[in-house]
Image (cartoon, rainbow, N blue to C red; front, side):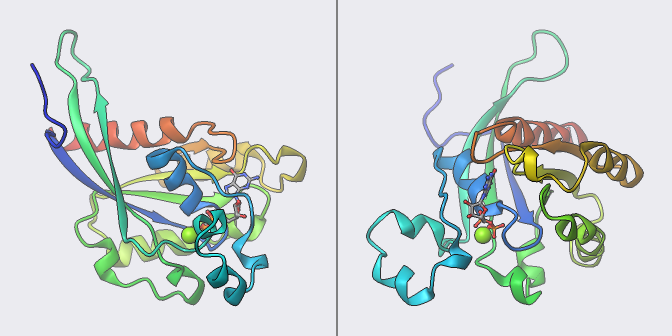
Amino acid sequence: AHRVDNEYDYLFKIVLIGDSGVGKSNILSRFTRNEFCLESKSTIGVEFATRTLQNRLYKCMDPVQKYFRRRVTIWGGRKGIEGKTIKAQIWDTAGQERYRAITSAYYRGAVGALLVYDITKKQTFENIQRWLRELRDHADSNIVIMMVGNKSDLNHLRSVPEEDGQALAEKEGLSFLETSALEALNVEKAFQTILKDIHQIIS
Ligand code: GDP
Ligand code: MG
């Protein structure tokens, strides 16, 4: 059947969480626009970033928009079943995680969470427990959580072994993948996996 552009079977709200600098915004821009920004915003003065609003540095700044949307088709488990079109509404922070100031409005209605750490920064992995507590306190208890170890392209700087990520995910009952937003590795797969898991739960 012919589908018009804004038709979909489900709308799922997914939130991105994790420490500042782990690559949340770049995972999102890779998934929704196939874009990546290399410059670290933490090395760019606010003033400088403001002056260069018109050029590519703009993408390095925290998003002004609350969320981005992308339609994804997933295929059901049973043979012959029709693909379902899911509109993923993915929420990114505007940098509030730096001040631990994410409000419950951010989590409201979310059916999935991508919990991101940086494989080169042990502290961001250790903080996963803190983020899980935050989810327990603010999000729906049925929320599907996928843990993501980002920056897998920086293997030479790795400080969190992949097995440690795997082990924690198993202990906490989460799905797990290592991604690279830079090299577009596993980003699509991470979203496909979480959307499939959510769909399985609600259908
Ligand atoms: P956020 O604070 O979690 O939203 O992180 P950002 O998306 O703003 O990324 C922080 C920094 O990490 C930026 O300098 C990005 O270029 C860099 N970065 C993000 N993802 C990757 C990745 O997969 N590989 C590498 N090498 N750098 C990344
Ligand atoms: Mg960000």
